[in-house]
Length: 207
Image 1 (cartoon, rainbow, N blue to C red):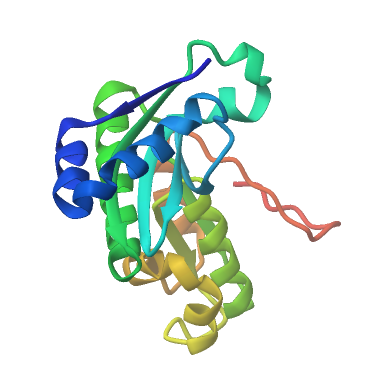
Image 2: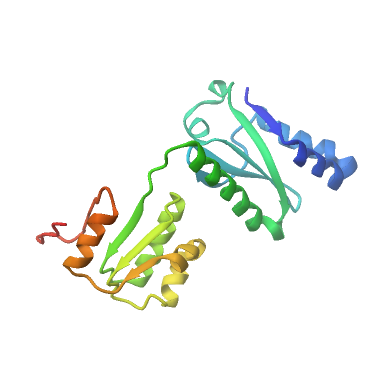
């Protein structure tokens, strides 16, 4: 059986907010020991998954081992820790989720030797597709985007519309306006490894 942990700060907040209903709320959170698959997935940070459990207009956020939840059966989750860390109403939901993600990313960077990955797009042609790439990057916690000689207006509303929740990557992306041998030399110098791929066949992009 999984084990549910509620941080002292959150438990105190629940008792204060819900008073006589707090027993019902705490029982709901503890119910994950019997059914650890409950809750809506919100984000994945490294090996950890952030999920939420609803109670009326309130959301309770917990973190747990994403790999175990997705791979193992209930009978195999006897050592799974489910930790409830925060709560919010619907109005403050996104802000609270972002705070949890920020803390987890900070811990992960301190505790592990993270590979620093930058996504570089050479002469991207379509603003919407670039926005979609930003979303994919956000899902995997890649924060650095470089556009080399983009063939569209980087202030395009289509770019921002398609990026959706990843607009912070659009705001801080690096744009290199030229594409020439000097730029390629700089890229080779700035990064330890360059791994390239293209959908176009029959041309040589040897960098």
